[in-house]
Amino acid sequence: MGKLKNQAEIGVIGGSGFYSLLAADQVEEVRLDTPFGPPSDAFMVGRVADKKVAFLARHGRGHRLSPSELNFRANIYAMKMLGIERIISLSAVGSMKEEHAPLDFVIPDQFFDRTRGRISTFFGDGVVAHISFADPVCPQLSALAHQSAGRTGIRSKLGGTYLCMEGPAFSTRAESNVYRSWGMDVIGMTNLQEAKLAREAEICYATVAMVTDYDCWHEAHDAVTVDQIIATLKQNTENARKLVPEILRALPAERSCKCGAALKHAIITDRAAITAEAKQRLGLLIGKYTGD
Image (cartoon, rainbow, N blue to C red; front, top):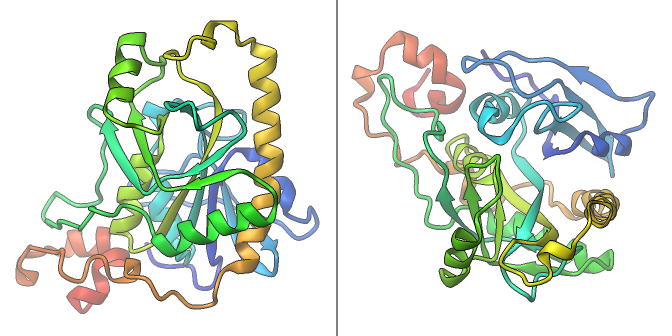
């Protein structure tokens, strides 16, 4: 399954509420299938801030898919099929530190994996690759997101660690306090797999973690009402709607980071040992390194 030329430049993963950024009479709904199955939903493709953008509702429209049910490989592979070189990922998180208050945006530069059994790689089944993941997000895209937040009046922090838990239940107090003792900044359920797969796909990736509440470690946690959380979610979404066009306006036309060559030295398998089936399945990712 090959690349759909010039379909989009930037991918945005979040909730379906972001579709409103697209002009209703200019949006195209694009349904794709991948070697790894279907993505969470159709992509909504259009122009924002004079950039070609593809929006994907991470959990499907109507929020039908739990974090453990997400087909992360299909979501990222489909982005690659669309020709996307950069992904902005927006997600709700809990805060593990007093300094990250509800309505703050944290743009992490590290992840800590507490998921279990999720598939986090395109490789295996005949092709072995080991990407560098010491610095798991694109520093340039993350810096642009932080700078753009400042210009829109959104309080944000550049840097910090996103702990990715399995879910769907939230943490116990014991777990939450352990995570705090480890120095975690925010906790969520989705972004670690996205970051790994984007790196393997040689796509720049940055997370904008939108704080909705303090995790259960906080003494005021039990006093927070559902209405308060919903109000915070709505305000975070409104702030993110302001932020995304600002990031898009600031993006340079060309990438100058290392993300676009992440597989250059990562593929370990002898090229002669890669089967035709594997080349067909992974050609979009590895073709430029295998000569196919």
